[in-house]
Each structure stands twice: as structure tokens, then as C-alpha cells.
Amino acid sequence: MWNGSPVRVVVIGVFDGVHRGHQALVDRAVRRSLEPGDSGAREVIAVTFDPHPAAVLRPERAPLMLTNVDRRSDLLRAAGADEVAVLRFDPAFSRLSPTEFVDRLIDDVLDGRTVDAIVAGSNFRFGRGAVADVSALRAIGAERGFEVDEVALVTERFPDAPDVVWSSTFVRSSIAAGDVAGAARVLGRPHRVEGVVVRGEQRGRELGYPTANVDVERGVAVPGDGVYAGWLIDETQRWPAAISVGTNPQFDGTVRTVEAYALDRMDLELYGRHVAVDFVEFIRGQQVFDSVDGLIEQMAQDVAEAARLTSGESG
Image: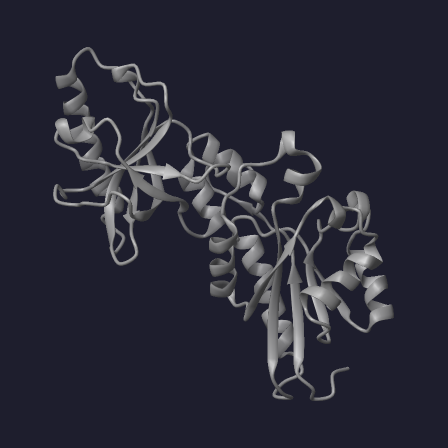
């Protein structure tokens, strides 16, 4: 039982994407911190890992990331965490025993601060070989003086799909297939990629639809090739956009790019600026047309569809 001293709850996981399942974990940590009532200060600390453990343990199978660590930290704070601590996952860290893992967490990452409870998902694994589970964490907690809350994975039934577990794996597979709307249902928001706007072939400008060619960070999950409705965002503004992902086969392109046309904006000068692209809905796959005029006609239809699909959202 807590006795009026500050209540500190840690919620731990990779949290790639900070999807609705991760948000539920943070929410549970927040609620757990409130259980003692008005006994004193409260602190919810989200602990994440960087890089992804798989990138160290099985680099050939490392997943494409849904969020970089900065974006992840922002999303965890938005979900309710007061603080985000990043555990550097390297080969030495991967060899820690479960007990050493917990000691490192408390002594180094939390600077020896007292932990009242740790919240983790039912699939959380830790320690050398990832052999320890939540039950092992609970046993260590009994010795170290903290309690453990286990949160079950959430399964949701979508009207047009079988039961879906809220997971980063599902989100990645949806994004790869171009189902950005399905990914957004689990994320709780559109999937985002970020990068600096660089000069491309300038073909969009020549065709009447100047695009921002975004140099997306490496290792990030980019939707499958095609045309999408979404948003182009910089530090201060947000524009509805038609987004093209792919190699531009109409002009025999070989480099895969992400290009976003801010609807009805011919005056934007974004070169060298860091922007974000949010994907709302798939419009169509990549096509090769019989003529450039055919391409321009289709682009006009794509822009109209992007406008329709983003019209219900405020900019």
C-alpha cells in the first residue's frame, strides 16, 4: 500500500507507432498512478528502446519503423506520460539477465528513483534471450518493492475484416499493402513519414501539379506504391494533399520517392525544409498511361478525390 509519498508508475515497451494498444498501456499507468487518491505527487514514466531490439538481435529481420524515437516520445507524452526515458539497446544490453535488466532500468535510467508499479503488455519480454515475461517481472518486483500490472492485448473486430489485434505488426503489414485507412484505425491517427524536401525531376511542376519530394528517413515504413489522399505538414501549416509513392513508371523512373502535392497551392517553396506527410486513404495503384495527356487527366481526378477524402477534416 502506498502511504502518501509520491506515486511513480513506469510503463515499458518498444512502443513503435504508439498505437491504440500502446495508448491503453499508458492510460492504465496514468490510472494506476491515481489509485492512491490525493496522497501526493504523481509521475508516469514511459520507457522505450532505441534502436528496436530486433535491429540488434536479428538485423536481417529488423522491422521497418513506424515512428522515430523523437516522434515516439512526443506521442507517448500526448498519451499521458509525464516523462519518456529511452533505453539504448545494444549487444551488451541484450546480454543482461532479467534481474540485471531491472537493476539497469531503476539505477541508471530512473536514477535510482523509487518505482511503485510497472505496467507492461502481456507480450512483453526482457533479459538475455528475451526469456523473461511479465510473471518474471512480477517476481522481481516482489523482491524490489514494486507491483506489476499486466495489460492484455486488445482484439477488435472491424466491419470489413477479421478480428485484428492492435499491434505494430498489423500496422506495418497494412501500410505495406497500401491500406493506410486500416493502419489508422489501429494507430488512432494517420500514419506519418517525415523528411527534408529535396529537388526532384520537377515533372510535377511541368504537369501543373508541383510536388514536395520528401527524402524520407531510412528504415521507416512507407506505404505501398500508389496514389493517396493525405496531408502535407510543416512546422506551422497543414495542407490537404495528393501523395504519390513509387518509381514514376510513366517516365521509366527507378528511384522510389514520396511526393506530395498540396492541393491548389502553386506557390509553396519548401526546399530544404523538414516536413511530414500523413496518409489518409488509398486512391489508386501506379499506372502507365498511353500519353502524358492521359496522365494529366488522371492526376486531375486524383486531386479531386484527395480533396473529397480530406474535406471532412480540419486543416
